[in-house]
Length: 121
Image (tube, rainbow, N blue to C red):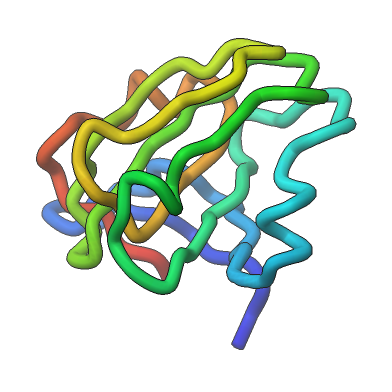
């Protein structure tokens, strides 16, 4: 299985994020975007959790030095929440249980809407 995915709108096939690193391991979850200097507009992380949950999908922004888009999806790929996460904030959690989380450049928030379905290739 490739470690990178392209994230598209299910309805149109339009690319919303060209390069998302598949992040399913404990180590990848632990590291996330901490200590990075930034992200390009076409890259990010796609966190995969074992089950849909608010608690499991909650993030912090300690040691992340730049704002990011945090986009949570349910098990079917529907966007359940999207927020701008700012550096050094202690907690961001989805409004509803989420199984996936995309962390990317803040411009991603202009390309996704709560309720739409995304697919990973």
